[in-house]
Amino acid sequence: MDRLIFGDNQFFGVNHMSEEKARSQALRFQENAAIISVLDDAYSAGIRTFMCTTHERMTHICDHIRNDPQRYKGFKFYPCMPYAHKYANAVTEVGMLGALKKVLPDEGILNAVLRGGKSLASKDIEGIITLLVDAEMKMFHELETPVIFLQNVVVDLLLGLGFDEAFGIFDRHVRQRYGAEPGFITMNLPRLLDTLDGIGLDNPIVCSNINKIGFRMSGGIVEYEQALHQRKFRAMAMSVFASGAIVPREALEWVRGHKNIESIVFGASTAAHISSTVQLVDELWSDGKVVRSGGLQRGSALIA
Image 1 (cartoon, rainbow, N blue to C red):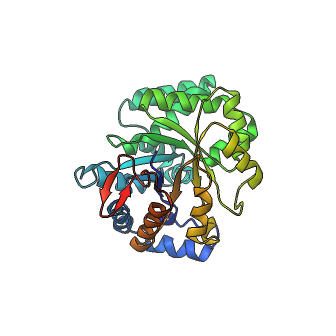
Image 2 (cartoon, rainbow, N blue to C red):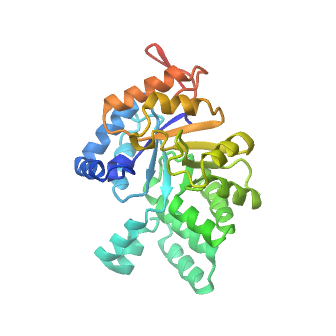
């Protein structure tokens, strides 16, 4: 995975510290052109991976990237699913059958419907899960999606229910159908690692809040640091700035001290903020793997 990954919270009015800022960002990014402009800024700064929810507006962003492959050479998506509001909105707008047709994959719609019907009738949970994954992946066809994430709203619900096998189903389907690596987002890193170990998932990709002050880290910062030093998994850190509570240099210096954090996902809404984050990471990491793998030269800075 790339060391620095761009996230999408700012585009859809998500800010865990300030509702006012969240509303302001939602208003600013009402038009898809505003989102594309910021993605262009990220691309120009050397970032090549966009971690995004399967929000319905991502369909238009995917179309834009897909229609200009030369402009966005090497650009990758890390889809995060499901986006529950999408299904609720679709049912409200076009009814149950219309919603089903809207979210199902283009190929094999009849097969997917039959598979879903059979799954529901026989309580075949594996069939239901794979059907929903395929529906969510519809918008990303022909695009690079090397890692596909299960959202924390589902991951943590499954943890609470003790339905551990669902993680194995997701893992197998993502690998077999999409040739991608599965990732898991959670608000409780230690517990998820125990569960994934228990079903035999080796060295999983796990994204969770990891920051200096323990912001939104269920289980506490001590348990997270123990996991980072003692457990075998590929860690992706989000909320490293704790929604602005930690200044960037202090936040990233702390992350830099945990060498087994493989990637950082961050959000920004201006070219200046994106550039300053890239430059700071470039300064703090000197192993030739700063933003993208491959060691491409950008001016005087090496991007990993």
